[in-house]
Image (cartoon, rainbow, N blue to C red; front, side):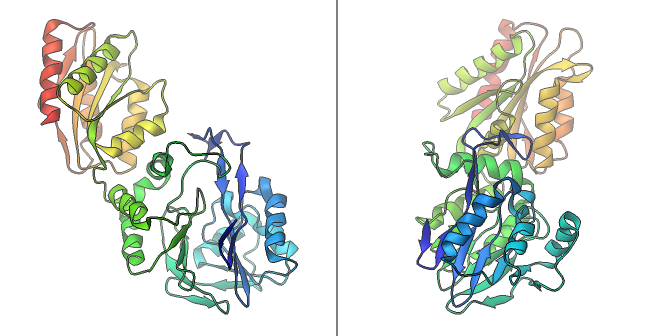
Amino acid sequence: MDISKDIIYVGVNDHEIDLFEGQYVVPNGMAYNSYVVRGERTAVMDSVDRHFTDEWLGNVSAALEGGKPDYLVVQHMEPDHSGSIEAFMAAYPEAVIVSSAGAFKMMKNYFGTDYPDRRLVVGGGATLDLGGHTLSFIAAPMVHWPEVIMTYDPEARTLFSADGFGKFGALDVEDEEGWACEARRYYFGIVGKFGQQVQAVLKKAAALDIAAICPLHGPVLTEDIGYYVNLYDIWSSYGVESEGVVIAYTSVYGHTRAAAELLKAKLEELGCPKAAITDLARDDMAEAVEDAFRYGRMVLATTTYNGGIFPFMREFIETLAEHGYKNRTVGFIENGSWAPMAAKTMRAMLEGCRDVKFAENSVRIMGSMTPENEAQIEALAREIMG
């Protein structure tokens, strides 16, 4: 795959993986991207997961057409991108690694060496002249690891964005849902906690003339760059991307589920553009997190359990708080046969989140729903709709 006449894609597709980072379901696999930039001298941009070393080295060799690389640029040391560094350095003993000081510290941890005789340490603002192409490095700490650098090639108007602008899914699988769906789930699951750091990088990128973005996961982005940058700006500033309400629930015997479904129906009657409902015990938790950040309003419905809340709801709220949930309106539905504590517990868990407004109307079910509960649900729906 040629990105331009001098930039060639040499990444691989992983269809063996079941859980990315040990937790995210990836039914369409995963891409580990790598690129060759050819000038008078040649740089390879990042390696791939160690399980695909041989395939990757074959791709690199084919792109080099019998030549040898001068540099391996390591933008990110996470093992799915650094796992083949050792093999590359053995295959090309004259090549020099170009990376941040933090990355070289990690290399020693992973490989027992930081390649002291074959390295070039770069930071934000540094450049590397390839002859015909200039690699300009951008410090991107905590997007989403501390050692990360991104790279801009002004001649090709190309940004190599490390894990930024990545998405789930292998590149040899047709994406019927479009880029945003799996890119959003990827962002909020993996990068989302670091919105402030992403905002800092976006400000740096605003000064660049970008015609293509080459991430380490997902497709190369070449059309309507402003669309992708705008979404990243919304996500990283914790803005509301879409109008709607997410209803996240857990239910033991079906009564709380019935309340959540009634709320969804009431919202739709009131003209809610999207009422997304998710069963936290059965549905993909990462998609629920994605929706919680996508929409500006959320209702949590769960049972009192061991004096607190049902485990899946606890995990969900903890994940939201950990990822910087803020700027949202939240309502509660609780159920408890003798001593309901769920609403109090959920609210307490979210009180540390910034700029979260709690609905005045709430619903308390003592076992199964009553006509009074149905009226409370309608009142909650009206308040949430504003």
